[in-house]
Amino acid sequence: MSSVTASPSTSPPSGRHQHKVVASIEEALADVKDGARIMVGGFGLSGNAEALIAGVVKKGVKDLTLISNNAGNLGKGLNAWLEAGIVRRFIGSYIGTNEALHRAMAAGTVEVEMTPQGTFIERIRAAGAGIPAFFTPTGAGTVVAEGKETRLFDGREHVLETALHADFALVRAKKADRFGNLRFYRTARNFSPVMCTAATTAIVECDELLDNGAIDPDDVHLPGLFVHRIVEVREHEDAFEYGNTRKRPL
Image 1 (tube, helix red, strand yellow):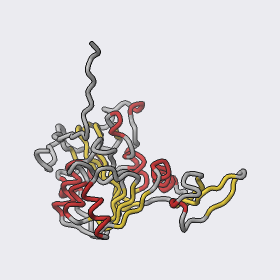
Image 2 (cartoon, rainbow, N blue to C red):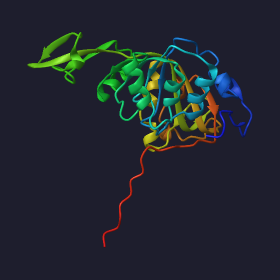
Image 3 (cartoon, rainbow, N blue to C red):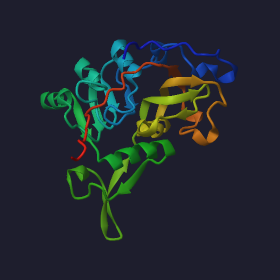
Image 4 (cartoon, rainbow, N blue to C red):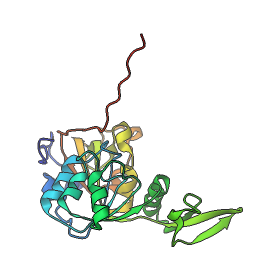
């Protein structure tokens, strides 16, 4: 990634939705403070809001609760937050080969709450839907259920899981209009739309900012109602974790 500075829009803001579009990463993150609970979209390094992630480090906030499927990998993505020492707690479903997180766990500098991936996304969805808690059979009879209420439904044990809220959601979209209607790029959509519904403030880094009406309603993955701030960033590294190739049979 060459810069965390937003690109100028191709057309001027207009109408009552212009306040959602901001000119820089710094402006987009202006009210992020120490101790914030922040959801960040992405699956591994796919769909990372690279400029917003870098902008949080540059801002210098600390004691963050990071809510994300994973906390980066191979020294990239959200790994930058761990290396900067700004994460106090991590809630997610995958640690993998993230050596920075393993070191932080061992040192006791980052509290880690592991959640089964399906439960993780359902907790976020529940928050966006106004559902305070739900029962699930996932994790029943394992360490996941320790300290949680359990009940039997149809003879099967279920675990009570609570909704997962955040102060901010940082996500990346392929296209956004000025109202905040979003279209994501294939699997880069992953957790991002649901996270926007569960956060008090949803901040979107988009590859391309369009005028209202430019995205066909049938192509909108997330309505702009859930989006509060938009910044256009056209250049990204788009790193990937592992490249797999297959030789053609002889």
